[in-house]
Amino acid sequence: MSAVFESHHGWVVDIVADGIDLIGWRAMCSCGRWYGQPWQRSALPDGHVPAERRLHCPGGHLDPALTRLVLEEWECHHFEMQALMPVRLAFQDSESARQRLVEAVRFVRSTGASWESIGQVIGTESAEVAEQRFGVGPWRDTVSQLEW
Ligand SMILES: [Zn+2]
Image (cartoon, rainbow, N blue to C red; front, top):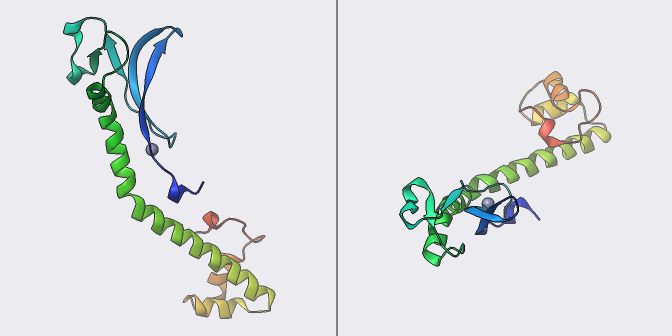
């Protein structure tokens, strides 16, 4: 799946010790690159101190209000990812443009264009600069290796 269309869905997972004891919870995101800080399960009602990330939940299953509390961190992550979408799209556009530029240079070089001519059209007025950018060593296969 393209990173542009990557979705972020949050949920709460149990934290279990020794495969048996439920000791807390944390929020997770479907993107796989984010997870929230742990919330500790308190066995006693007076241990319920959300400000200290301790929750009393006798049955082990968080009620909807506590689930929303644990998911608040994930909501910040989700909003941040949404806010960063223009950056992601612009970056992908620039990567695509760089790839098209490399392919165009490869094509015109294969048809006999000089480095001097290429330098003129990319604004360097220098064959050496154009060749250094696109022609040093074997053709570069990845755009990310280009230095701009
Ligand atoms: Zn995410």
